[in-house]
Image 1 (tube, rainbow, N blue to C red):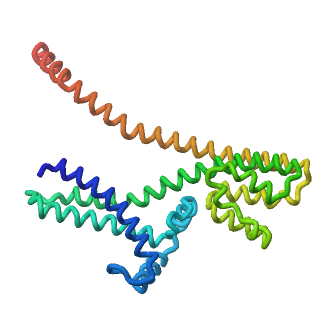
Image 2 (cartoon, rainbow, N blue to C red):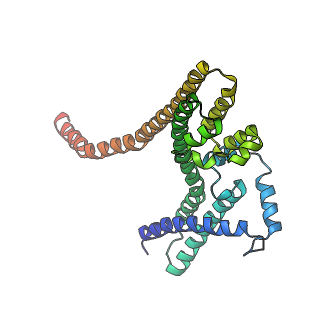
Image 3 (cartoon, helix red, strand yellow):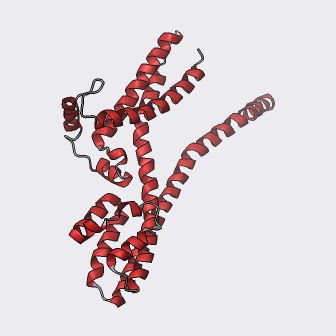
Length: 279
């Protein structure tokens, strides 16, 4: 069996295993009864082991991503280990069934590592996309919210009308019962559900509105909108800079290597001519 075919099957198998691991983990973790080899007692031990070391980066990432499927760090780490382990088993079975002459240890390690990191990088991509959408929604929300408040619209009605045309922000707006019960707690829950830094800026600005006069209201919210826009532009510049660095790392070495390969025959011919006429 050619190694190229093995690599193709390993890549496809890694993607399939990653998708299957999401479904299996979602079914197993949410179940109250023991399923497969996992029991509630075992899962509690796993959660204690994973959460024994606090990791702020994981919490920030999960908050930015909106906690997809309602999963926390234990569930995502579990999916990572399942993905990497299954790829190892697939490789071993493939070698055993296909009767490959040499065991592809390096390929197995690389494929397992890629499959292990695939859920994490997928979560990071989703978090970045969600943060970008929410940043745009917050900027639009602020613009509409200020206009409605200047027209003497009540705070909750202005908040609902301003958030209605947004893509994702409208999903996290507090309900009327939550707002009537405790507006401060409703805003705190709203900020926690957003999970992004722009959401913290937005909620802080909304809390200070009640203490401002009509003349200060427009200026304050306009500054808030500028702050959100500047943060979004900063993220765009950061992405462009990282793309430039990646381009330099990937393209330039390949270009110089190709140039050396192309120039080597001419260099060899030139040295032969010089040796012939100078010696």
